[in-house]
Image (cartoon, rainbow, N blue to C red; front, top):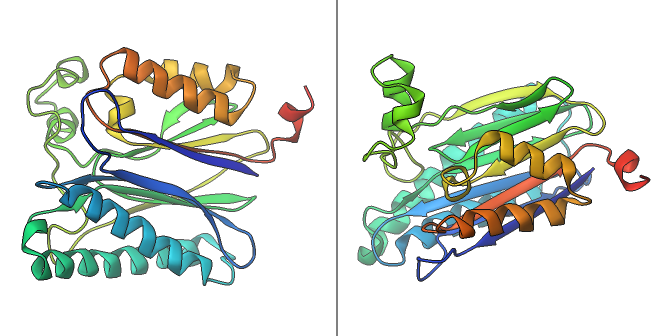
Length: 250
């Protein structure tokens, strides 16, 4: 299994409020994270960094995950706990009042992937059936699309496109969406912030990943593309490939 994380401030923002990484537990199982912070001044990067650091520290001290149920319980328990940590930090630091972060995190084993997410940072899967979005955005426009009040085309240019319905660290009780999927050798899992998906179409995302010579090359090319198209937001993505030996030998 191969994985990498890359983030870029973009062309407009003065600092990067995204966070994330690829991390391993004691049995060398992989956890991928992307978090997109929000809040006044520098509070967004505080929230996303807290979420990533806390989840990383808990993962590296975990022995192993043996089933989807165990992975789902672990992700839900840790993220709910981290939600309270972010809330308390904002209470203790006045300058961080109102901060929060999206998060999408995936426990990756050879047989299955368990994904947890809050907000509009996304997870995609590339396999023999094509390219599909695994998560559903917790955003105002997605809810309008889901209920038939807005077309997907109009949603792309809606003035309130960035309004979230929920985020980590903004409310005492938070509902986390979790899902487990199976995957096979050569499949790709992609986690990314909206700084990428607002600039790159799904079919382009897929094309850049499957045609590149390496994960690193595809990530750099996708970030360059988002920046070429304006780069108004921070851009982050994590890509994991299951058993990539076949591609390495080409």
